[in-house]
Image (cartoon, rainbow, N blue to C red):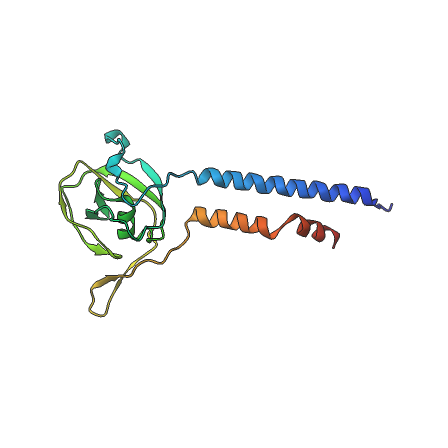
Length: 192
């Protein structure tokens, strides 16, 4: 038995395929958009400006740091790896090697206070030492920068190069795939 399809059947099949592909692409973009609903904060934002207490210990908060403005006075940073709650979040994230001045997504965990905070100079940010505080925070995730030893054996931190976050890579790949396969490309592929 030989099956043959008439031109109207083929056209209906093509239209159905195109509609299904567009629907699937829209669902993917909408799901990724929900992931991106992370509050953007400024470079002077500090965690102590939020109403947090002991009930929030261990809770992780996600924030998006924008590109750093050239003319801004940045909030100070106190501590190394574990920071005083009064430290600027984005500035501390650069100090920790989590982002660059180009900004990026940061995850911050609220922790109990430390007896003291030791200052250091890392990735172009100088943090200060500080005495005991009730609350602290630390960054969750892998840094995008690492410390390296210079010729003298001292740790010399290079400013980190910007690496896209997992969310940025996912959205970028999804958008790229959507752009690469336009409706006309899909129709052309079917008739080849």
